[in-house]
Image (cartoon, rainbow, N blue to C red; front, side, top):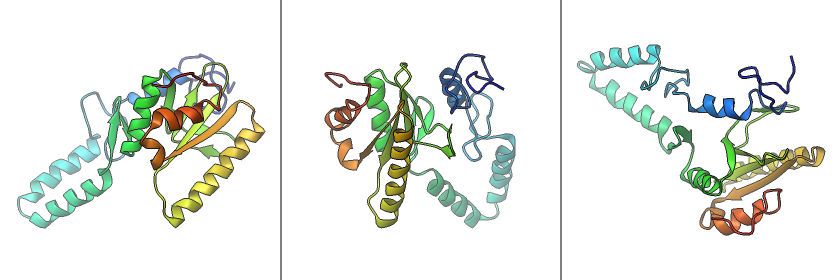
Length: 200
């Protein structure tokens, strides 16, 4: 099978993405179960299995009060800090602000797409400049020791990818950049083919 043809619509695509740009965006906007991410009908938030569990759970709550408290705590822990941008979940307020910045500046991007190169990677943002270049944007939101090690590994991996592929560019942001994306992220984007005299 030709890796440059989208299996959904037949349009051309980049070989490291499973679908073309438009089909990937449509796929991300399909409603999914809040617990297991299985596709669900429009207007639903749970798949049949988890909806049944929820109904059974509601019945059992009449007699067992502690189960309710436990489930509510687990649910809050699982979904705390989740935000939505165009019906798609993003992990943090900082990433949500980056989504708004990219949209305000008319950039086409995907959030956490699966890319298959030498191995599977899932960057925070992938921006397509429609001229053949792919810009990978990773946001690093924490500053502890373990996270710093993971950050160093990711940066090394992305820099290696960019040195081996002239069509790839890598930039990153941290929490300091979020306070003034126009200047901080704008300057970093100007080091890629997405140069602009003025960022919004």
